[in-house]
Length: 244
Image 1 (spheres, rainbow, N blue to C red):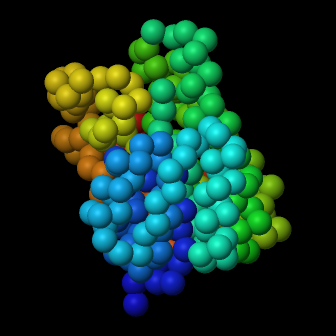
Image 2: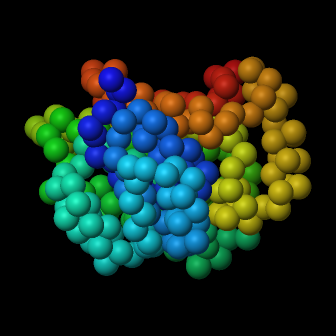
């Protein structure tokens, strides 16, 4: 039996990048997955790619009405949630940029978890997508880094808020993982992503950047009973980059 057999999972930002890779991993491990994202075409492509045990619900993570519609669909089809992966993706610092970033990464994540509480089973698992930039001083990343530091803090505070229900809350912090997020969220071109990856690979002890599936495997571990005595942590997946 697969380690997520019979589980019901919700993944925000599941139409591309880490979210999509995690949806594929969850389904392969036996879960039924609901994904959400802003672009219907990408959601349709994700459903076609995975092929089974998946429902896509279009919506914006920062729009609370969209969040309600997502959970109404989950309630109607499955009635509960065992795993929640709050993986909302991002938007020169302007007020609009600040608001977009914090709406997606902080406000959107907070209400994604809050509105899921009636459907989350006691003893379920919540995984928050943070980033190593929450603990580093990357240039030109101040707003994004601050938003991810808030996510790391949520993993701790949600753990204490939900301890009576035995709901485990953990954060995964990816390192350099070339993905559509660099283009969609940070506005980088394909060439800029390659240049950035090449410029930092020398600082990674494993000598390479990571893959989407390597993050998905870690999220799957935190979602499963294999991590039953782990809560409140930040699990860094960066090839050792922040450890040296």
